[in-house]
Image 1 (cartoon, one colour):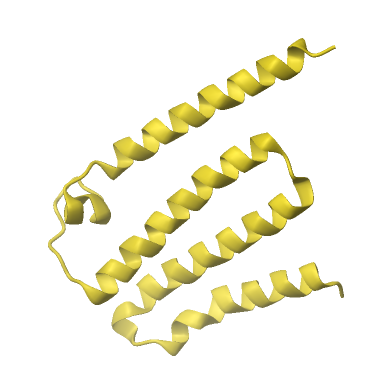
Image 2: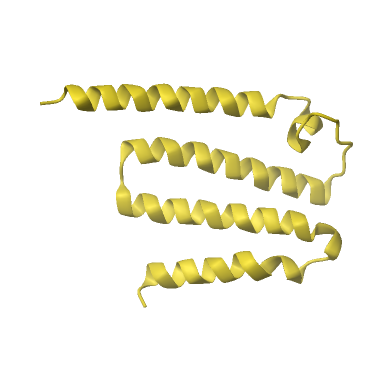
Length: 124
């Protein structure tokens, strides 16, 4: 078994069982955190293999989203705040439209991808 395969296997075990080591009240948050950590690790492993500008942009956005999951879950473990109906948990905490910020980042990413594809198509 090569190192990458072993690492992915260990990450899968960590993702599947790590939350059980914690108090029942925070297990869902630990599940979210462990899942986000595993996704970030898998993205980094993939980038190491496919080193590509387009993949880097997509990976950056995806890691940003997973970091939001980690921040939100850690926040809910250590700091309790009221949830507002119609707002995600992190937006409610900081009274910021995190979803709108993410949407703007996705739109910007789409423009970058379009420009990159157009530039690549023009190359002889």
